[in-house]
Length: 89
Image (cartoon, rainbow, N blue to C red; front, side, top):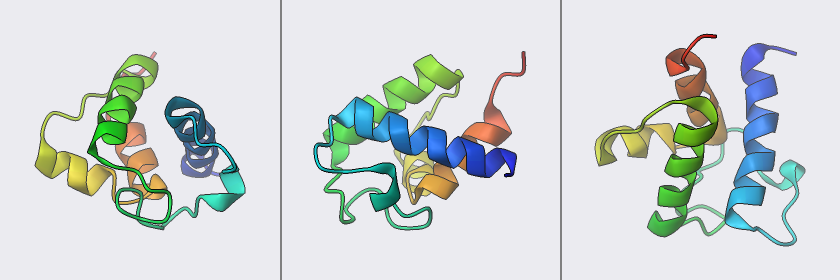
């Protein structure tokens, strides 16, 4: 299992927990499916909660809306961004 795949499964659990998604399991979130505005019903307020969780848990800031749109395109995009920008150590 690659580093990104490990991050993807970790993020799925954190997304479900952070947003209190009832009746959603990690297997229900597809790696490359649209996160915001997709089947999960994640909206801009949910995104703010996720941004705060990512900053707290991974030390990665998502500073503007343009970056947010790219980063929250899918769980894989989010995992890749965190992996590339995470503070080492």
